[in-house]
Picture 1: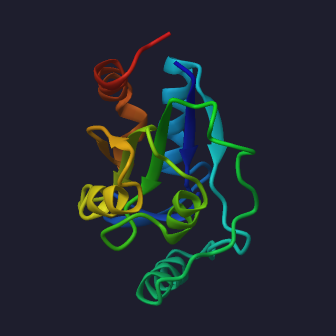
Picture 2 (picture 1 turned 90 degrees about the vertical axis):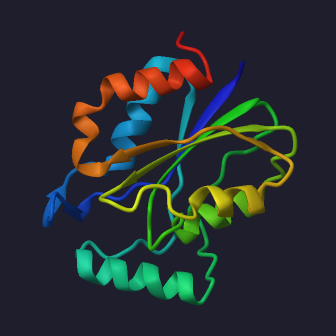
Length: 173
């Protein structure tokens, strides 16, 4: 099965274990890397043309404003096509109860009819929230499988959990 890992992730200042910390690599990107090692799937980072602020408080204010205004930020790039992929691992942090708006832009750009979507989400206490509901609404003709939810502060200790999830929804090469 040909697979793609498409993910949105942000390093810089993040809320981790109750405090603001600077991360070199975003939590969702760490999980995407583990999935890539387990599956051999191709990686694609979803990046808005206008990046979020490195400052945590400015970033969350910007993300909330984007969501309230239902903004679809322009992306730096897209995969040429998703046609060759049977399954897409879709990763994102929980931003205000759903996916970052850049992920909405990505999903609306392609036709996911007949594709398998395997969502994975990082968070610091709100879990998947409305992410699955929104994903199913955006991709009604895709098969959305059970998602993986990981505390961002625990990504480096979640290898076994990620491996078990990948084995349950897909395959490990």
